[in-house]
Image (cartoon, rainbow, N blue to C red; front, side):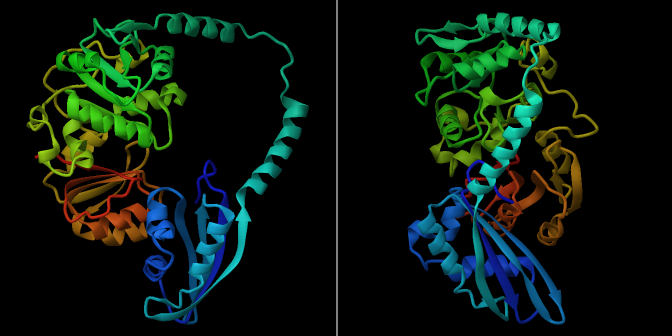
Length: 411
């Protein structure tokens, strides 16, 4: 419902409509009747796109021709801005064709709830969780082994870039943001990572990408996207591994790292997300999709990425990555909603996608669809909270949301 990491306040709003309405009608009324009301700085659509306002959670029920319910909106604005936003929502007088009455019940300070939980948890920790001083030999061994791996970090090139010990010898490399990311991958036995150390891509990185199969693996934040955008302009990247939103590579667990690298996609599938048209691309990047395989996932437990550039083998029967699903739905006019483990939640015909979005009950991480996606459909998918959309093409996209990744199937 809301992100506990960034949310300060939670607005509780009561809604009564003189007729039967549905959730999309309520959301449409909120955006439509507040648009331009408070100026650009407090435009609800822009606030949601930048993450300062969270998802709009609508909980309604209809009975005897009348609809009642509650609307929850999380914000990271200050008190005054939150109060103005809440007051603006009370100006809504119609939902769909029906007269509506909207009022703010309360504005909950999430931080107060957090403090109460902290106090209660501190009491539990004080009583139950203090270390009794016992020594676990397995933990000691793990600490020593991790220290040995971290000590193997070195530098390459004139820029002295932090790198794992296998970067120069391996046929495949993983490019990350900083030294801490390289260290974290070393902890998990991945020895072919090298850091760019900033947004100015070093010459040594560019030269390495020309010789080796390269996977870009950056943090799931705005900074990571900016570095990826520049890297795509100056270097020869083969694959992109997307970290979960808000996750840093240095903080990821071994399971998260392996899963993210396994779900990497060819750069051709994501290039359109960062460039409006081919004219923005360097000449050497405008090329057909290459049939490459990524570093062998089994190496992620030891020598990650010591494989060669080679022709991709036959697609497995059961799709296990986004790329597999994209290839599997191509030409079939179907859409698949996927969960975080790349399992299919629901598969439908493409012409039924709009109806399916509204009726989808299970949490979905993304959708792969064999048709063109327009602005109207994209807005519905963003409202559903999906992390990515992989489609045949994207047309008429005027406002690109920042909280969803767009991947275009290669022709």
